[in-house]
Image (cartoon, rainbow, N blue to C red; front, side, top):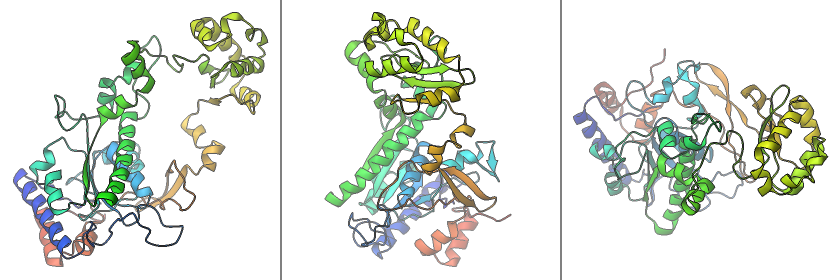
Length: 437
């Protein structure tokens, strides 16, 4: 799925990129561009049909030059809303995550499959998303200033590690490093243990969601102004913004944060308790809920104990209270506790393994297991979209493309190159296509 104008030398990279831009400019003059001014695929914010099945981003083309997780996660979510996402990858290996395995599906890692569904290639788009080090695409003639000249309608979203300018702007941005610098690792892990990396790349995912929302806002803004814009989105800013009350506690009260394991610094009890055969997370956010927990645990004497009468007192006497509760939870298996808490109004739930997650009745009911047919290995399952809408169904799941799978189609059908030019581009290595094995 790679229309690749990233060539084998810096000189050819620059000339190839500019040549493609020139082609896009020519297409805009002939009315094929998806931008404002009458091109195909124009996104105007107005309904294109009276049916309730139309998806909000149908007709929007997104040129995706991102790699790894934050960018692909953002564009995958846009694809779920009907956008045509057109992924550009580098020659030879494509997106780094194609090789991030095991496990693999055929020759592709499951990591790559997890964030690259619903994508095709094109060079004529409404949205341009990239995650290169600031300035790199400008060297190739593909910076915002270059794109804006030929496509003033473009919503150009740049996802970086630390921002467009500043002392760290030229550093490569990886989730674990950004989560360390932003303080997330400082507050993650056991209370008396070392900092811990979250089990999934939360900084990348948060940045992807910020970018997703920003692109939607950019499209809405374009309907008001008739013009595109540049979006600066980065891992560091996204994660610092997500520190919420932990950051406020420091900024206002100069209170340094600490690690709490599964517990909460301001609510007691609210943590995981070890049962006879697993773990159960239980939270009591107010005094009434705490009384209910005590009744379920058959510890009614705790309800009237002065040391635990309010949440503030429970926080002060955390260690003593948690010791009592932990001893009681350890006496029964998780299933027994689940049955006792059912219908109580208390927030509770087991710590599930992946096997347990995808056997959980509510997970299945919410449609969070989605089937799709992969071109080389047949049917596979991936996580489904988190949000559902009343007036339309999410886009049918399609697997991410094989590297170079749609190159010829895009060159011929969208960019309108003839066969001779396509052969020359393929021969020169300007683009590449998938070769069936």
